Image 1 (cartoon, one colour):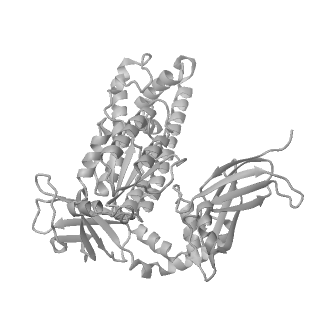
Image 2 (cartoon, helix red, strand yellow):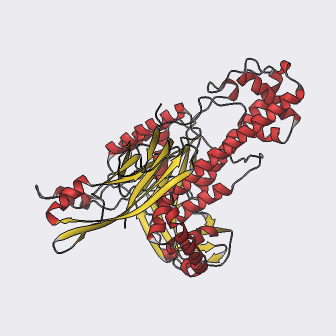
Length: 554
């Protein structure tokens, strides 16, 4: 049998070994200079003000607000009231008076940049179907022409580019592409039960053994008490490890999504759909560090998050059809089982509540009407105030934000509640990095940036001129590149980078190359339409590999 090289393709890029030394040098410089850089870092806020009756308060001025960070009064550097709604009469008249045959005026900046974040890692299939139906109705009935929408999922973005669009047909198409990742049924062996088993609670271990017998066909009469306990503790470790993995996965992608939103114009609103996620670590203790970092990143990006629980209305645990039958369960333990299920459900909602509350949004639970929750969220942002200030450079830890309207203690202020000081350091260090370093940082994130479209194909091909066995072909979209027009030609400069991993996820090799090109002016329009093709020959041993490639303007 001939040796075979198998390759899997991806649009992601990772950090290249060839620039690692330069990164270390730049990192030392950034650490040295970050205090100076911090003076240019703005903190942006979005605030919704309502009166005692819950009505939106409009027409407030900058001097009506008092802003404090860690109790210290802050000078509001910029201020604006943002109103979102249908086009005004004058705007409709201007659009109606466009002369036939003439191009319409350029579209206005989006009133809102909306991200639909679907946590497919923690979402059951039936719940995802309900969410997708609600999202399509939302697109049809509530999205305005000036709104821009991006769709992100926590379990991969295959077929869904990470970019904003105003095209409703594309939104519907991307919604259809969202695929489930979760398991087929809800286990009674919840993280809350697992945590008590890890603490060796006798009652919890007894209940866990019953769950294992009911769900996995374990016959307790055939094993010793010591063996049963060992199996229960082992299962508890698996449950908590999986909960930790899912939490890290979802919150890592959430941070990347929030950072991506920081560059979006207008109001930045994220709708976060999830069945919920556990905050328990592998030892059964609450671990909120990742959650705090995710919230801090959203606050620093001025993103308001609305959490919508995708489980909808749930049946009591005893008759929940999404769980395994309890026909062989000890009736005396049903009450304790129900308590553990309720505790885990509440604990899974705590993170969603915190994300919404601390970013100035709201959370919706126990509703099957996804479109209604989205509508309520929309109505709550038709009027908001955009404020920004320069924070001080001293102080570590969490920086709480308090905003109030002077002379109106009866007004309710919904805004971001604070962030981690470490995020300011990260922002300053990022500003100190070179363009190439920022490029590799961006393409290494869970959500790849797609300002330039890149597609890849790989072919097994042996030739006499080299020892390579694989030809990697990279097609680069020419419509989003930057061209420099000279007297008689147009030129461009591009960086192409790639990495190859083996089946175990270990980096095998990588490359970074700069490409320069030029063309006559009369061929520029053709080049914009057809793009460019770059081929790289690679020498690989027989096996399975993943290829990640991308390009950037040099």
